[in-house]
Image (cartoon, one colour):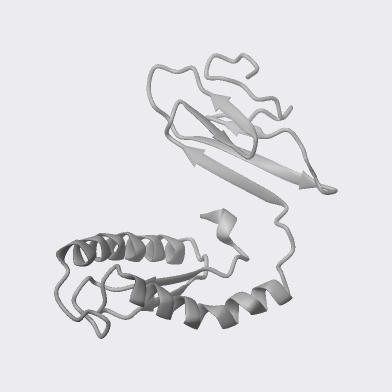
Length: 155
């Protein structure tokens, strides 16, 4: 969530109830929008808890169909063009979390050799346009910046 600080995030959602662009009931489009509505609202609540600003357009009536996507895109074009005109500076750090034992992100492959699943964070520090080695944190901090597996070996 922290990676979204300073990013202009816009979310458009509805409950799946038929709206102005639904000439007839569409159970598939309604079901998909209902599911994504729950996910979107959960994401917004998490962002608010973390004090990460997001724009939410919850228009209640609408389904997961092209007519709503097209309308949302037309509405979003003005803020999108403003972002392109004045892009935010690159963040000093970015991070990634996973409960998976292995994952690939930003050109790095990380493997954690542990019996139990744990949450692992991999963070990059951006310096003069390049990337330093990531720091891998799995309950302890390696101050040397060396990637370590759960058994203490370099990864």
